[in-house]
Amino acid sequence: MKKTLFLLGGLVISLATTAQVKTPQLSPKAEVEQTVGLTKFEVEYSRPSLRDRDLHKDILPIGEAWRFGANKNSTISFDTQINFGGKDVKAGEYAMFAVPGEKEWKITLYSGTENWGLPEKWENEKVVAEILVPVKTNKNSVETFTISFDNLDVNHFDLVVEWGNTMLPIKVKLPTGKLTVASIKETMKGSPSERDYYNAANYYLHANTELNEALKYVNKAIEMNGEAPFYYIRNKALILKAMGKDKEAIEAAKLSLEKATAAGSAEYIRKNQESIKEWSK
Image 1: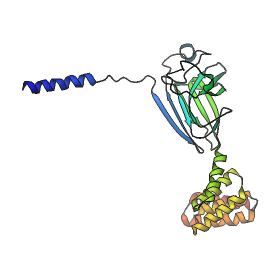
Image 2: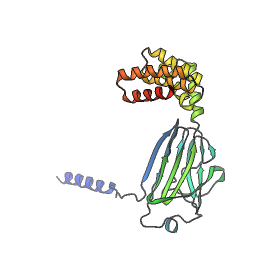
Image 3: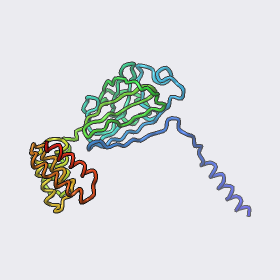
């Protein structure tokens, strides 16, 4: 009995010594993943809040370097080369730092990413990009430091930084066109599928380039399908129109309308009717 009590007591003591106090983080960590075009991004940062403090008087003095968040340095990674605020940057993971200014902020991408806040020793050779971003004013104050992806396009977007009444839209440009064309050419060397032909035609149509190739590819997709759906035929009509072949475009739109009507697609019925009317003028 005494032995049993002794063992139970030891277990209680063991549990007590391994317990840890859990407290909430005042600047919680955030991870944001976003694919734009063909480039995948990930941002990791900790998010401090104002909590009734003045941004520049109490937290970020004008002209002093800042870790761009709280705790461990904030990082951004991407898997293709990009243009960051006017500077070309290779794929990789980088820390983000800033020097706040009244009219513009200096934003730096830095190849050393394992710092707790600012690097203990700043190494200029690790600076991969340094840009100046004009300050814009938010009408409504943003309580918690926020980094977001906005104004998304396949070729560019804004990396938007907001805190208090300060907003910094960082212009980012992407090599989506170059990557897509390379992918199309590489795929066409092998055994492209029906969908590969359709996607290639669709890309060239919306990029308004290589329209002869686009027509060849959409025709191949239609041929391979056998009973091509209305949206295949719709894209062929749009490609023909972009090439200035209005008569052929109208005929393709009529066929797409017929197929859309049979499929019960109200959207494509409307689109084709509008196109036929417009192109027939």
